[in-house]
Amino acid sequence: MNNVLEFRAKCPHVETLSDCREALESAVMKVVADAVSKGYSPAEAAMVVADIADDYILMLSRKLQH
Image (cartoon, rainbow, N blue to C red):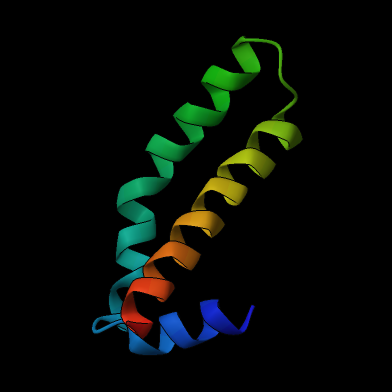
């Protein structure tokens, strides 16, 4: 978790995170809906999306440390 907090503090446009969420939320909801249509539960699909996002954030934070 520390890596995520460190990364977020280094985001140059922290105030735009809500704008970014607004821009991406419908696409993420479509990904979840597509997974549900393939038989996965909504919670399961959302958990996988969150896990993928977490992995990506951790990868970015490692790049910032080098």
